[in-house]
Length: 368
Ligand SMILES: CC(C)(COP(=O)(O)OP(=O)(O)OC[C@H]1O[C@@H](n2cnc3c(N)ncnc32)[C@H](O)[C@@H]1OP(=O)(O)O)[C@@H](O)C(=O)NCCC(=O)NCCS
View 1 (cartoon, rainbow, N blue to C red):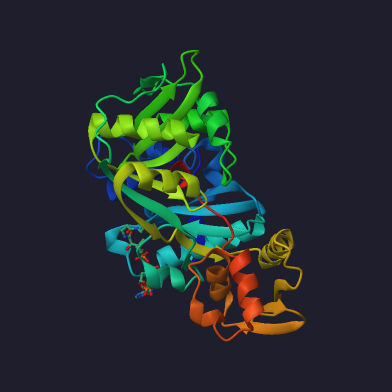
View 2 (tube, helix red, strand yellow):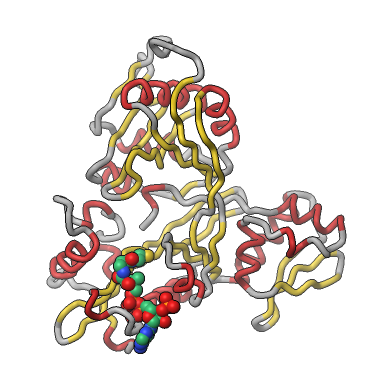
């Protein structure tokens, strides 16, 4: 089966895009590669895989590599996306073959974890993926105070795509958790169809805050990328609500100050949701990062380790076996299964709650 797996060449790239447009984007006027410009760029061709039968493309999936900067350290992350099989060739194991091939490739390329977004729970569980991580969803319905005009102290709102990507990148780089991006990548993301870009500028033309709403077919009316300090973002969100009405905001769980301020100033509903399906690829590297992060928190006795296929938590020279690697994934990024730790010594439970979850978030544009 593996011998049928191919990567596109410059010659058959267009045929592949037609297959994907037909199967994943049948009713839109843009092409799928304009929605995922980095995943479908020339330098990612080796990470795009498809299966042919009788000269026809019948199944596809791809990888995009990200470096995610977090306080725990840098994580090399493989994002899987655009998994699809022609409806006449489904249930023959083609998508499983491709996902298996891609996770093996990501492992060989030294990725720490693999992540994807899907509602196919059983399908991805079979590959060792676990729903884990968290993000904050805020359904912003209106302002608590009736303000007729936002007081910006002379700053100006701009609602256009005409914005220097270098300035966006500068504000984005201030996030505690975020991917490492190039100016060229940001420039290509800014061209994604079906996107609204809002920004706030100081009188001397410094970018103070930006918010990106929508991306192609995904995340309609959702602000999934943003940058700037909390007071400027609050002004920008006030402007958006006055101009376009209610919207949703998705943020990293590390943005506690922003979430708190929004809940204070806006009428909104807030819930914490899981980030996506995560699979650990480089277990040793993850154990090393946990050890270091525990020490940052003054927890010198807590660590995780593997022996053969078994995974353990170690505390004060005692080992506690975890059911499997998926349980480790849940322990590391949450949501924490209280039953998993309830029988452990109390001081160990405290240490676990101090060290985990590890801060991690993948932003809207990064999703394959
Ligand atoms: C989801 C999707 C990609 C699956 O593709 P596929 O090639 O049919 O997937 P597979 O054949 O590998 O697996 C599908 C099921 O068939 C079963 N299967 C695998 N080999 C089989 C075989 N030889 N005979 C019968 N069934 C088989 C698998 O067990 C699997 O069941 P599971 O979900 O319990 O694991 C496909 O249905 C699709 O394109 N859907 C529309 C797009 C979409 O939703 N994409 C998901 C984005 S994440």
